[in-house]
Image (cartoon, rainbow, N blue to C red; front, side, top):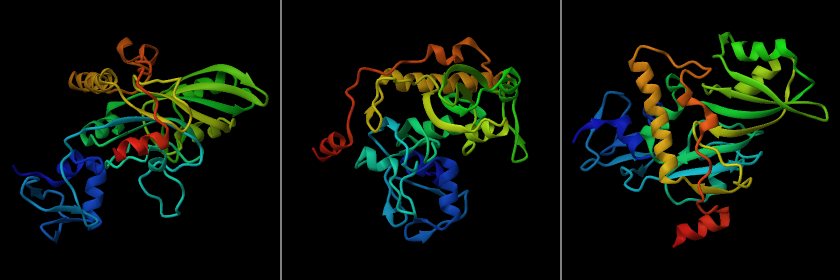
Length: 284
């Protein structure tokens, strides 16, 4: 059956639909040995020879959903032109999976990886407003006015950030620890927000992605999501789609109590995998 090429690439776990379109525009996608740059092009995944960078792709049958507790010093990408370590080095999977969204080189915390292009696209698209919760250790002690500025939105690079949920949750030697929940995925957004109020981030950790949390997952290790957790992610996306269908726009603070991260699914009791263990299992 003919489908749009970017949808096929997304279902095959190559990249999100938007990223797949970019691959096409860059001339990295071929169909039956012909380079395809036109975004409306259709193909049949069962009959056509579809390749990205010369590698033939096949629509994923075994969908995988991984949760990684990323340490500092790893790039959130499949490969890095500067040859820095990537999050795929930690997972060591033989499947063609990729990270969902960003977590910058100097930050740590929870990161999803999958080959489910449709779900990845929905989780990362700003229109769905899936919340991400961060704990930011900042320099100095932000006052009430500073916290209100973060909550209401700030002008960064000519664009105002969406409203956020911000509260102080403790102190450290040189400043405060803030809990910050955002619903958009700009590059280094939390760091830029804190810079804008004069309290730069010293240490940043992501502790929740939508309904997913796992305080027990050790730094540098990963595990498969449980079926319940995958269902919770799909439900979170479905709720935002329902809100949009009713004529509302998800912006942030929470539109419904059902969105609250406090009601998040806690880490399942799946066995935690180390990079060595994951490679061993993939070889079996």
